[in-house]
Image (cartoon, rainbow, N blue to C red; front, side, top):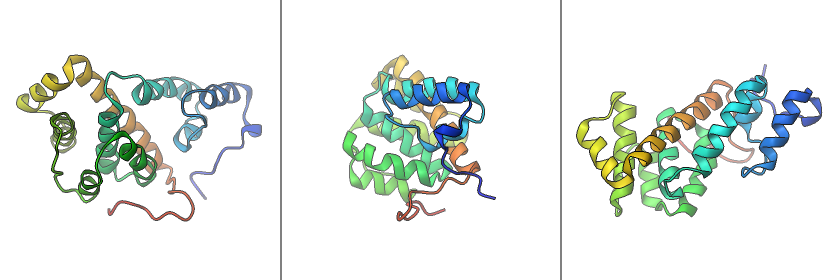
Length: 183
């Protein structure tokens, strides 16, 4: 049995269809796979999609830093679909190819920008240690501000939810694409 199949909007009940239409009309321009999965629980889908729209489009973080945090999160969870989906967004937002390749290979990237280093170190410390040491936290706060650190944690949390949803339901990368991450 396949854990994930694309949702046919015509098969949705009224509550699911209302949320589908709301998501599709928003900044995403469609209903991506994890949100299709969440529609099985309309209340979860409704609430999580609002958090996701904020995490992706509404934080004080520039897209470059949000996308870096998303890649760090996708790499931590080895979320093939999420990495495949966001690698190009990260590149368009200004994250360099060498940084992207290093994160994919689980190597420490060489950063030219201190805010990128701070985001990477914050994410890496948290995912490795389940906590962030004072020096790493203070460096992030100095560069991102308190609001930025709170929103960084929100981005990490939301994209962890996305990543574990994709992994639990075995959502594949698009047809014709190879999984981009080694286990």
